[in-house]
Length: 417
Ligand code: ADP
Ligand code: MG
Image (cartoon, rainbow, N blue to C red; front, side, top):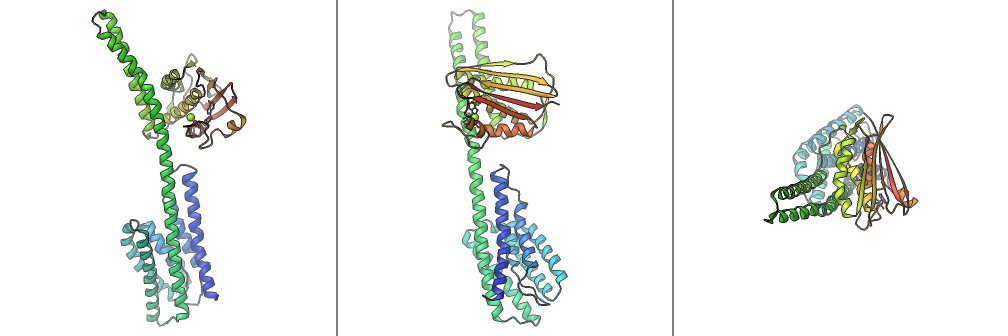
């Protein structure tokens, strides 16, 4: 292999390396932290590739520098949109100008023509099929090489075919491979995003099933009381009592549905001072129907007065408590007692939630909070992970003790404002 081809292949490596780096960042950013992929991450690929290609070029004489910079330039521009095109153009000018020679002018207007062309194309490009995309990127590459070669002739520097044939072939192969790789990376991200969305839907639909169950109870009770009050022999005062009970039960059903909708709906994120004293009573009310259905008695012990607030997002904290309470209830399929207590100590708020359920083995306890760890047939294994991360984001602590067959206790400590 001659020196030229070797150098060009090393240049190709400078295109592949940043591409794989970007793919890795996408994965870390999205798959493991549940965050939306940031758009600027993609621009690392063309910027780093162009810099590496230009700083380690193929063959240098005092007029011209040959490298594969047009490939990251074309692809960066096609996938990154018109803002990135002009940034990349500026980058090339800044790096190329100090190197001097007539080559600078040729590079300048070849890339300027490409930039204008791609600025018009880029909005349509992402909607094209893979074949068309490959065709467009290859055509742009060949077109830009032809402009460079014609300009070289015009400047009086004819290029012999020993150079331009391998140069063109390697450019075409490189852009084909790089375009295909970019498409694969984008597809992978799409699939990942779909999987994560499906997970979210699963939690919401899981809750929906238990909520509709919970709503049935108050509805049945109120139906019973309305039927009773229909009886003409009933004393008006007693009838009023029946109707009041029916209304009360219907209110409860409405509350349960409202609470559910509050969780299902993506919440508006706002940090505020939360009264744990009120919040605990609220979440306990939400889970009481579920507890009754499972034959579980809930015991809530509150201090005489409220002594402090916690800082955080109310909806998220509610979700965190509900996940823990729900697990406690689910661990006692044959009924039992669920104890919840609240206390204040040295600038911190303590919440203890203890059940008398199945408990966990040491191995299960170690895995608690890991995504997708579940021992339930229809479990998602996401509840504890979400709860832990919410408490930690409020600078709180959560400790769990558990004994198999005896029960589990959650100790939550939140900083007091
Ligand atoms: P899921 O409830 O969908 O299974 P979680 O993340 O809420 O997912 O809980 C993960 C696992 O941790 C449960 O499947 C269960 O094995 C265990 N677990 C959590 N809380 C308790 C508890 N209070 N008692 C017994 N096991 C528990
Ligand atoms: Mg759970």
